[in-house]
Length: 325
Image (cartoon, rainbow, N blue to C red; front, top):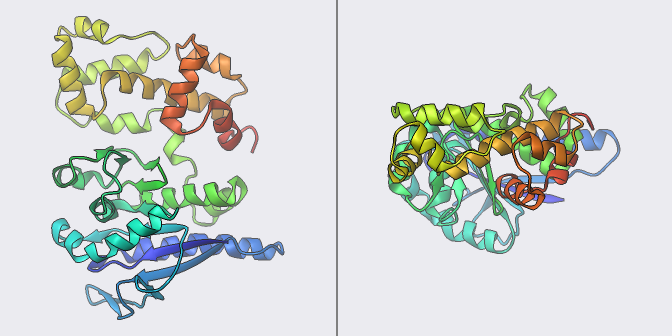
């Protein structure tokens, strides 16, 4: 049985994050019990102490556990906490040693929405990717310059650390975790019960790229559009520089500033999103998908695909294929 700990942070905590996380995992347990199988999750709440935690004086939450309890958990969920983010992080820094200790012992850690500020405060995100609410992106970048922020991505998953975008996209991350820990069938059941669109992170071919056009650099937008419309071609930085009459170094600098990706990373991500969609929704074999997105080197394609998704093309198809479902 996997032990899940929901952190009851100090401050204006998102009660909806706590309640949704608790319910989605416990509903999986109920589904297992209905077919005569044991529960998969033990879900508990944890605070700095067992005193009642108030949210704007409207809600009361009494944590079952505290950081002083001798427990070993498998998954830590950090909900969003609203307010001045520096004050929020400072108010919750007492959680940091506990979270780090559990992570070192093998636990995975999740941040929901602006809960990423608290997670980043632990230092665990340094050098890693994460997402948060897009409205908080600039503040996050200033507070945590060592974290690779992808503010328009719905879900990130890197090194046992997960994060979700703003507001109710946290439900997509919880659903993603249900699938990871309980399987596709129960994730599909959960998506129907809670009326959440499953695979929201991967169904739209350019979902992580559309949001990256929210900048004012028009030549860079045109370069992005060219890449997305010509993903099957071999596109080079020099080619784009000539096409849009921008020096190579200037193009790379402006592209990174506007999209948070280098030109090469952006090209790879567009190609891999198309590849993911083909693996999910068609019967094309891996080589056919590879040629479709402009790769001729099997090893290079598999290397980039695994770098972007964390899975090999075959593993990805086995996990997400709609045809198999």
